[in-house]
Length: 83
Image (cartoon, rainbow, N blue to C red; front, side):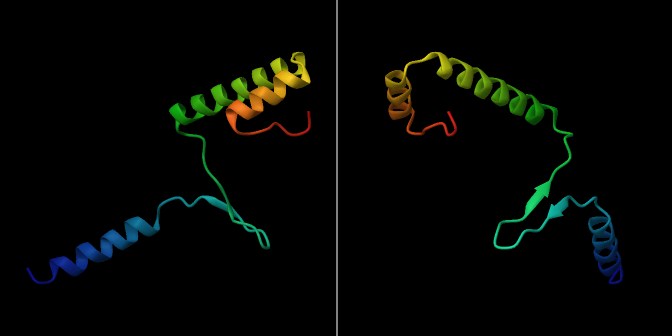
């Protein structure tokens, strides 16, 4: 009975160490970038929708006057760069 716990501990460590690791890009004086696998369909759908929304916003902003864009930026609390 006393020898079961070290065996369970050893097996747990082996199983945990065999898990797939994410790819990491290291940069000088910048945070590391973790390349994650795209297996989460809910997250992938959310990212797709956000990209579509951003694209739509950029297209609509091009049709707005400078005054309307400034008002929109003021209301949202951020500005779009490179317009």
